Length: 448
Image (cartoon, rainbow, N blue to C red; front, side, top):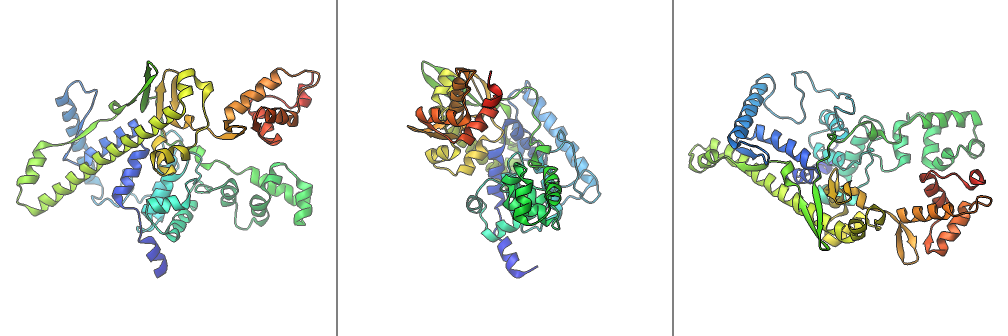
């Protein structure tokens, strides 16, 4: 391997920082599973289950699980080299159904085989940044700052992720996603998705053929190949299979116009230290035993710190959401304000990517129901007095069409003009998009 490439790979994610990021992203159920798995491998750890009726029975079950795990290790290599399978066969990427495997798990298994040890931690971090559709939306600068790593190492990591299956993951745009799925020799289709994607969407075969100097048959064939591609490669997998009943991570209640926020810490066990091992660590004169116990005690201390940081971040984000979306909590779902993750990040002094991870897969329960925390982030359109929520714009379109003259229905341009009069500045195309989202036909089909 080239020496310069090796040097770019040396700056990798510190294990402790990576673990902190992973725990921040976990919801309560995922955190509970992680702690159970960790306790099987760390004899110093004890878990206090909130709903256990008998603490002694809880500890007995944990001891039995540890013994079962230790017994299973006799049939596999004791050295942990990353992700491994249940048997002795070489690790091979496995395609599983949506119910059995998440996108990140599927990618991690492949990365463990194909990535160099130096680059693997950065690749793992990039995989953790992918959204549910497999896109990489976190800016390079934020990733480099949080890992930390050089831009060159990040570029290598992203390229490695983009070589994994399913094809198209790790892309930053739709055009890149489609291009990653096309064969290198399919130059026409690659040119179309790179430079003419909007015309492809509108099926402008003749214009494209004239522009590129090829036949309409060639253009039509390339468009057919493009339309067979998957614009959301990550959607084939689920990040976490939830039970029918959703366990909220945050509960918001109100009393006399005051809002109380409760983190649902009962959804995962509390991690503590076995007193016997703690005493042994203090009294042993065996250096090997002392070093081993110190390492295991340090692991628990860091996990406890990560959980505290996760909860503090989640609480800070939720407090800001409640403050900025006060109309929602007071009056109901129709009263969401414009709120971006960037706004919350600035208010609590954190990176936007940190806010994104804090709300990932997490749910909030309030008087109006249970909602994903991402539900409270609403993109806006320009209004006379600032940003107006897209929801408000759509509702205004619904009202205008609901009161129109059936003999003379309002065109999209007329709707845009009326919205502008109300202080909502959006284009005719945006009106058409919102109208379609409402399930309302164009003016020509509405004429009575």
